[in-house]
Length: 161
Image (cartoon, rainbow, N blue to C red; front, side, top):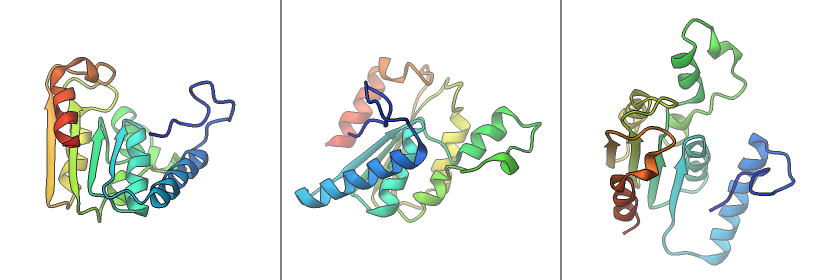
């Protein structure tokens, strides 16, 4: 479970490229250890890097928590009156990255998420071609309190079994 560079007392400055490098290092570690099964989990912006992981090396299972189609999609939802697509340097297109994923996919989302609205998670789910996919909504959960609900933990336990 890699942490973002620049967090958790890390002195490295965070950047999109460094986080992608961490994903690549994690892939090297996984290959070196020759694990028989790999599950990838990403939450919120971390869903981007989970999607990047499975685009580089498909795994058996993918859990995306409070995820989204793309960062452009989130920005357009919040700032509909600006041409945000023209301003985005990297659209963080999760749908594109997981488009070929064929393993088990579970999306977990809070019904009251005001940072990444439920409809944006549902849009990603609708675009996933994976044959084994499931969308779990925790009705009373928001973005930052999703793990305060037993349904979230049950979903994670079920996913890991």
